[in-house]
Length: 238
Image (tube, rainbow, N blue to C red):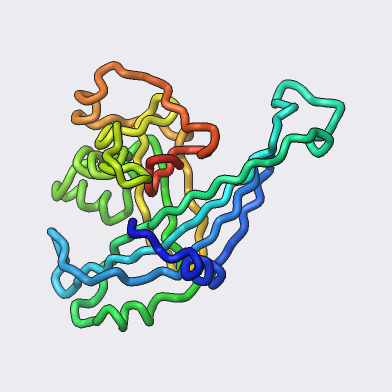
């Protein structure tokens, strides 16, 4: 993702901001820019009378961790965390989400942009099995594609470059979550919509290609503490 002027990004984020307070010691603040049209272009299997709009939205997540953890799910503490001197730690992750939407082929980028509400979202779905829309299920039933083809395209992998623009040491490798394959899609919604995380709720599915790649590997890949989870939009960190 190209670097953007910090002041400009801040101004854009203030136009469309949401705060997510979770029932956990970790507090997260999520900010989004408005959804923008990057370009209009024909796809490989473009439907007649349509053209693909490539949409993008910058998502900035600020995670605030307590300076010290003195309790757990098994043990309490007679002193509150505010009585300890450790300062909370703050980490910021910026990701550019991209979604693809079919629009009438006679529309211009300007017309498509005008039709997008200011509070529209590009939301994320994560799962341990391929994520299927009704259209994709229908295409599978008609023999136009397969679950494995879709799954191979959705499998979450490390990018070619790391956050510093250098070759990623694990480029192209699958990103496992608790030893399981992750699948991800970004979808466009005309109004605010929260991300959906099905990981751990469904049985894991591995395509033949993924099975061959992993073999019997069941390494438990955990995210680094500071990043909360793998950055599934821009997975150097998450």
